[in-house]
Length: 363
Ligand code: FNR
Image 1: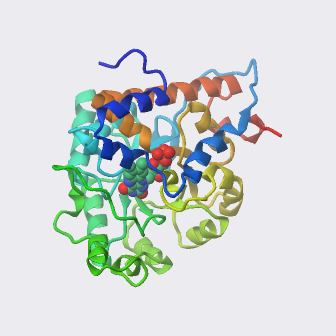
Image 2: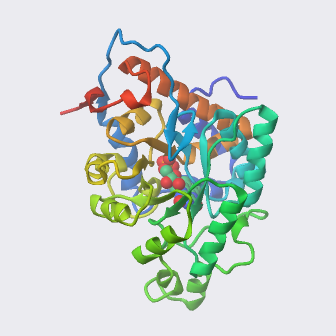
Image 3: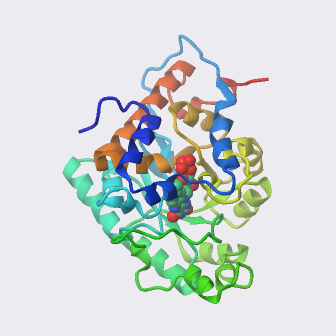
């Protein structure tokens, strides 16, 4: 039962607040520092204009794309977002069912409130029930305190049928997390001590704590690359220098992201950095982008500047909070419908036809 006045992701956001406990809502929505980056994530998209083309041949068009050898119904993925049971009792299981119904890829967080095995099983069951192909399922990895612990997660993801590993490198040093409501936990990490907890117990700030000492370094990327045959992506790259370094380490994909404005306040939007990073990567890795994507026209702008696809973070949780699986599926349908309309008005039958010639940068 989707309320009829929900017509955009912003509508879902406005509605979702009433469906979540206030501390959980704050955790979901907050940025870091003074929210400079959080605001910039929207402003960067809004500064770019679009130039329509008329009378183009749109026959046989589609939003479908192939990425890392997998077919996606649209150049849109669900970004890894931790602890989704704070929004709905079915948590990531409902999100996975929605992704499967829509053919949209899902990236499951290390800090998910359902295990990576249960989410993979939910995907298989949903595909069977709906008579569709399973949607792409990738595992977002946070490096753990030891390589053995990290590798154990990778092996579990491989065994469960996850199809790529996305290592997040931007928030390895995190703030103390908020108090999780009862019944919500990091299900994948049951039974392992978290470095954050150890650091707090020592009463130190950051440097010199196990939390900082366990943060991954480039030699860990070389090691991880050698350990798995799954496609490897690094999430949280924001400079051409780091993008080059990532390519040098043999990654298959780069996710440009400022973590939805939740880490270093003052960072630009990844959209602003996209042209320079696309040039640095020069087609040697698949480029994805997140942070602030809320409209089909945002997807078009990212693709025009060189991204292969985008990810959406908070909006999936808004959909989940409002209407569970149906809410996530509907939010994805809205975004894909907007993308199709935008493509049609740009005269693009396929995502591959979207290019910088469709952009208008305001003076
Ligand atoms: C996140 N994000 C995130 N990223 C990640 O790699 N692992 C994680 O566990 C989480 N968890 C998480 C929780 C919450 C509540 C939010 C809002 C975000 C970051 C996420 O993947 C993505 O980069 C941003 O959410 C994208 O920005 P938008 O779409 O939310 O503006």
